[in-house]
Every structure is written in C-alpha cells, then in structure tokens.
Amino acid sequence: MKNESTLKNSKPVFSGHETFPLRYGWLKKVYDAATAVEEKKGNISKDLFNNIEAISILGVGKNMVSSMRYWALYTGILAVNEDKNLYVTDYAKKIFADTGFDPWLENYATLWLIHWNLATNPNLFTYYWVFNRLNAATFDKDSLVASIQEALSEYDLPDVSLSTLKRDVECFLGVYSTRSAKEKSNEESIESPLTELALISPLTRRDLFQTKVGAKPNLSVYTFVFGLLMFWKFYSPNSKTLSLEAICYEEMSPGRIFLINENAIGDFAQNISEVTNGLLEWSETAGLKQILLKKDIDFEKEAFKIFERNCK
Image (cartoon, rainbow, N blue to C red):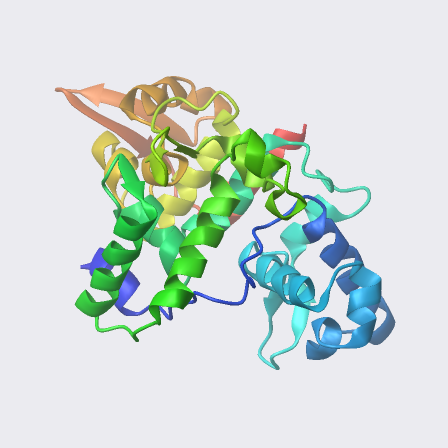
C-alpha cells in the first residue's frame, strides 16, 4: 500500500528547529540573504547559516540562525541541489521577492501553501502524523508523543530520544496552536504565522488540544484546487476520477491537510468547473460523488498555475 510505504520510506526529522517555531519575517529575511549571496557568488554556500556573518545579516542569535535555515528548507524557500548546495526555489522567488506575490505573509494563500509543504512531508514525522494519521479530535502532548513512538516502532524507523521528541512536539504546537494571554506576554512565545489558520487550538484543560475540522473561511477555492491536484498526483495519477471520500479522508488529501469536512469540500466542488475552466468537473451520478478530470495534465504544474490565481 502506498500509504504504508510513505512512512516506511521516510527519514524522520525531529530536530534542527532549535525549539523555535516559525516566526513572522524569518522567511523573507532568509530569502533576501540567500538571494544576495546567490547573485554575488552564483550559488549559496552551505556556510551561509554557519558563519558569524549570518548572525549579523539575519539579526538573530546563533541558535535562531539554525532554526531559520530549518524553516527555510522545510517550507520550500530553499532546496538542496545535486552538489549539496542550497538554492532559492522558483516558488520562493514568486512569493518573497520585493515585487512578489506576498513577501510579508499578508495573504492567507501563502500560509496555506507553507502549511501544505510541512504537513505533506513524511520526513517531518510529527507534522505528517498529526495531519495524515492522527484520528483523535483531541490530544495532549504525552499522548501525541506516545503515538509517534508507536508509529516509529511499527514502521521499523530509527528510535529518537524522548527528550528530542518532546521538544519537537512542543515546537509543532508552537507553530500551529494559539497561546494564552499570559504566554503572549513572553517574547519567546511570539505566535507563528500559521496560528492564523486556526487548525489546532488549546482547550481549557491544561495541555489538551483539538484539531478543528470544518469550513475554513480563509481557504480560497484556488488553494483548495491546488491541494486537490497535488493530492491527485500522489494518490491516483492515472485515474480520471477521484471520489469525495478519498478527497476527504485519504492521506495527503485536502480534507486531511486543510482539516475540512465533506460539506466544505462539496461547496468548493460546486464551482470547480468554472474555477478550472472546465478542467475539473463535479459529478453526482447514481449516488456516487466524485470529481472528474477532463484531460491529461502535469498535475504539479497545473496546481501551481491555479494557485497563482490567488494573487490576481
């Protein structure tokens, strides 16, 4: 099964963020610094984040420099080429250039795209696990840690120390969960931009959290279609149909990653033919609800083409 092999073949990462959740302005700072080096030297040295100049250029301490590198890589701002050098991705240039789509993360579409990159990466095991495999509506830190430990064992993946795993879960929650007024008063607890997506929230009981499934007013139909096509490529690239059930519940599906339910997906689906200029069509025949693909496409290319309509 593809779903099993996705995790079995992963290379789980639980460290590198230095326990710092993603912060506003970090990705733009990294983009600007990396672009300046790339323009000057032709490529980005692996030392960009490992020398004393980085602290001055990025305006943060050594540990935060490492954290910024981590977030730039896993959100897709930077990537690594065959020579193991870093480079600025095309999508980063379209978004974070001064004339780009959204250099200061003011558009929800950018936040959803960043979230998609995190939650669909099986190497980011905690993120992938919560959004693709965790079926509990509520959880606490200890139960989440325990479920990840069990999964690592089930898939014969390398063990990780309990302290490292706990820090990763803490950082994950810092990325997505809103904080109390008391926590917000602490500068070290500045909220991540992804808290604006309202995907995970704390409950009144200490350390208890809930995943918030339902309609997402700040999720556009274009971002939904982006997710749908990226999922189609992963799940069934040779099929011309995709069932509502798969779109809602399978791994890497829009339902899972965006935490939207059948009603919300149905609302998007009603307008999908118009939004995609007839590329996709919603069908309800003999009680079977599904989306039809009308022609062969490059799923990823078409997905980003439609996503970019968010900025028009």
